[in-house]
Image 1 (cartoon, helix red, strand yellow):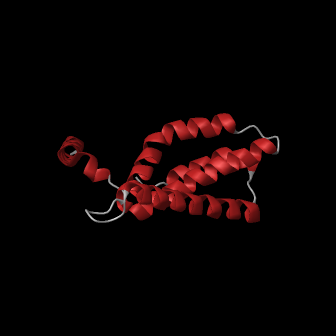
Image 2 (tube, helix red, strand yellow):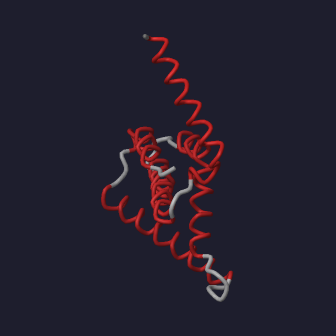
Length: 139
């Protein structure tokens, strides 16, 4: 009976792997909204690490390791936002697209700064905060 269960489980895993190979990157595509949320978490982590370092709590190494583990997702999120503002023919020019992305990033930075200013950062629990951000990132 256990062999039958293991066989079915292995079969399901093989199907899942085949589907991932078949659909490739599209299976992991994120929306512009999800990309914006991701950038907000990345910005919270960056600003939080700066606050903690200024207050004398060494968190830079933890932040940099977290960023390195999630760097592909950061790049994907930025590219998703860029793609979202890329209009079809006759739409925004390249410089206008860059302006829209810059304004979006500035808005995200402002939002994160306001939150950190009003709520602070629990520097002693910074590694736990990074874990929370990892769990919240959309993939």
